[in-house]
Amino acid sequence: MKSLKALGFASLAAVAVQALAPAAPALAQDAYVVGISAAMTGRGSAGYAPVAEAIKIYFADLNKQGGVNGHPVKILIRDNQAQASKGASDAKRFVNQDGVHLMMNASLSSTYAPMVAVSKKSKTPLLFAGVCPREVYPPANDLQACATAYAAGYDARFAMDFIKAKDGSKAKIGLVSMAIPISRAEVDKAAELANSMGMKAVANESAPPPTPDYSPFATKIIQAGANWAYSWAPWVTQIKTFQALRKLGWKGTFITYAHNNAEEELKRVKDEGLLVYGANAMFQDNLPVHAEIKAAYDKAGSKFPLTYFGEGWAHALALEGLLKNVAWPPTRAKVAAALDNVDVDLKGLRGGNLTWTSSNHFRTRHHYRVYRWDNAKQGIIQLQDWSSYDIK
Image 1 (cartoon, helix red, strand yellow):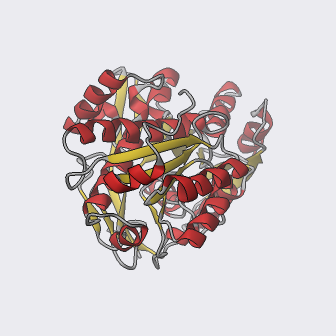
Image 2: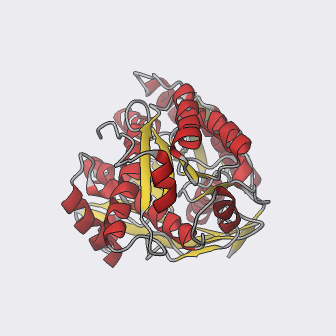
Image 3: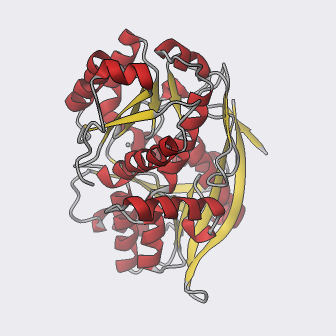
C-alpha cells in the first residue's frame, strides 16, 4: 500500500434534453432532482456523453423499482457542448428554474468555473464526472465531490511506479500531453517523478488540440532515445502519438490512460506494446455487474458501444449511495451534508468501495489495473491487477 500527499492542478448521442419533466415545483415535491450539464455533443462528447447516458438509464430502471427511499430520482440532462457559457446557463437554469438538489458536471474543465460559481452562490452541491479539480482533493470542499476514475497526480505516480518496476533505471521515457493546462501539468509531474525515481525523462512534448500530424512529436521522442512513452491527455493525443511512433518504426512500450474508448481501441490496434491503465474494470473481465449493465443497455439502446458505460455506471452507483443518505424531503443543504458520509460498493467496477468522509470528498483509496492486447489469446488481458494508493 502506498501513501501520497494529494496534488492539485488548475483546472478534461443525441442531444439530451431535460428529461421527463413536469414543472420544477412538482419535481421538487415528489422526487430527488439531479441536473447534469454534459458534453453530449461537440468536443469531448465521446468521453462524457456515455457517462450521462448511463446515469439516465440506471435511474430509469431504479425508479421502476421504487427509486431511492421510496421516491423517484429525476435526472435532467443538458448539453453544454464543452462550452463554458453553456455550462453557466445550464447551472443557472438547474438552480433557478428546475429546483435541483444536486448538480453534476460531465464535461471538459473549461465548463467548471462557471458551474462552481453558481454552486457557491446558490449553495447547491456539485459532483464532478470529469477530471477532478484541485478543490475536491482533501481537505474536503463543503459543496464539491468527485466520483470519476481520473485522479490527477496519482495517475502520473502510478504510471511512473509501473515503469520503474518493469525497467528501473534503464527506462528512458518520452512524454506527450495535449496543450491544455491539466494535461500538461500531469505530464510535467510524470517527468519530475521519473527523474526523481532514477529513470530519465528524455522528451516532453505538448501537441495542440487541432493537431493533424503527430509525427513531429513522435520523431522527437525517438531521437531522444526513449524506450518507453507516456501520455495523459484526451484519447486522440494518446492514440495518435502511439500510432505515429509505430509508423516511424519505434519498438518501445507506450503506457497511457484508459479512457472510455480504450477497450474498443485495444481490440482495434492489436499491439502488445500499447498498455492502458485506469480505475475501471474492463468489460472483458466479465463481472456480474457487466452483465447487469448489458441488460439495461440492451433494453434502452444507445449509439455508444457497451464498453463505454462502466464509468457512468460507477457514477450512478455513487449517486444512489449519496441520495440514500438524504432524508425525505430533500434539500440542497441535506445533500451537501450527506457528502460527508458515503461508502458505496461499486460491485467490482473499481478496486474497492467509493468512500467520502467529512475531510475527503474525493475518495479515501484509489485503485489501478493495467491491460494490454495479447496476440496469442487474440484478446485483452490484465497485465497487472489492482494496485492501491491511500488518498490523504
